[in-house]
Image (cartoon, rainbow, N blue to C red; front, top):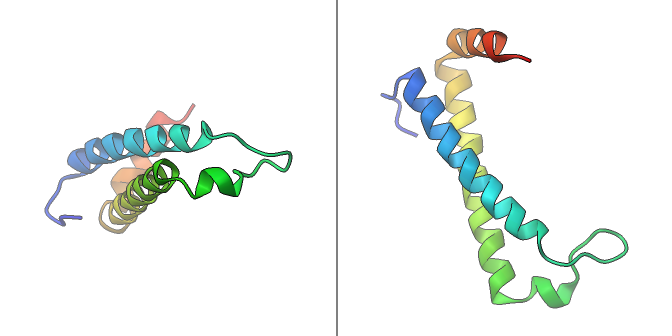
Length: 87
């Protein structure tokens, strides 16, 4: 994550990353589940599943990094933002 981004740019970046992570999460959840709620191995071994899982892991880690960056560099601004945008 670039350290010279403003708080608004970080929030904008986080929104885009969240959208991509949610998309890949929905794709992962679209695979069939067994009685225990787990994806069976026959689906987990397919190229489609592994690619979706790889993309989800990438975007989820990007989201973690941007959240870590926001809290590290914009703690006051973020808490004010959360206070304003709380339900």
